[in-house]
Image (cartoon, one colour):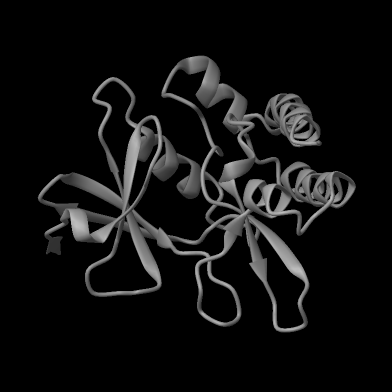
Length: 187
């Protein structure tokens, strides 16, 4: 399948990829590389293939790849609240005063438990990559949308992902960074 992406479908941009609304599925987005030196799409595909038999409900669901006018894209779910609106990030919830630093840290710790249970390699400590899905009962569920899997296709990064003890060790370091970023938002 081939789709045409345009500025009107633009959702967000990171250091390596631009994210677009899927033109024919409002629950999906397409991540396209804009940094030719770092192909984050291939590392994400490798990650999902490595973890395909695990129930990773704390990570946005992978739906495959698609050819676009801007290059090959990775298709994932858009994390949405029970009412259909796009979920806000943990960073947004702290900044808006909805969550205290202590509450936010508890969500990061919950996420760490799941990451360590499944041996998921994290590489980015940005809390903007944690979306907080609001459930019908008002509770929040953290979901990672980026920053997981190997950072690149180096032997070191791939080895960390494949050897779960190494993945857990690296992920613990990344979570410490998430906690530091969270506490820095205080005041």
